[in-house]
Length: 290
Picture (cartoon, one colour):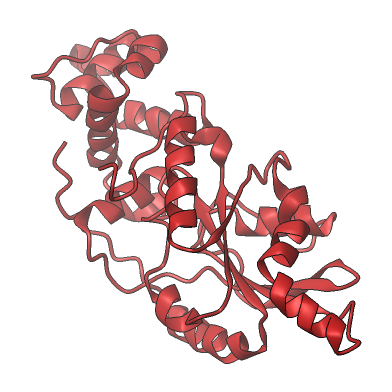
């Protein structure tokens, strides 16, 4: 499927302030935790984080593993570990994997904890910054590890707007930060993948174009999902719009003159993709697998 650049203008003005705040707070942190969407781990990873965080110990949380292809998640976990990061697989909405967070942090910081103990500072507070772009489930994850509702959560990008300190246990606290975007997409496929997962607001998207591209991808990589859910069999010559139209006709989404209401079908397809009703998919693989 061709992934040409999508015309997405998504960089709100408050992001510059967010970046400055994160850079200022990082010097007080023992480690950084990045929350990524397991369906699009690289696309949901802000490239500015590398420059900002420097050599800080890093924990990667692959969130929403319940919506991702298990084989894809295994490949990404291995890839990130190969880059020297600790990795935690999680489904924050259901609580899967979140209980391992304190242990993962302490394992990541074992050398620092040993040094504290030698200086008679066992139990000293550890501080971890939580980073993630909008709508990767960051606030839901924080609420789960804290054991109560502390951060506002909504299924739309850009909800958290200020930093919040959240205690996890007696010697671990995390700093929740606003979702940090970046000004432009270097890879033209990034906009497509983030829009599919809902990290870019639907209001600025051409949803029929987006759904057509997604349907084309599924037709080439996960054709059984289209057959099982919509009763359509993808052929090599089918465009994404062809498949979207056929799915809409199967669903009976017809308008005057017998034409298919492709806009309605586009919204249904995106909703069923994002909710997991359509299946479990990974939209990108690590560089060595692509």
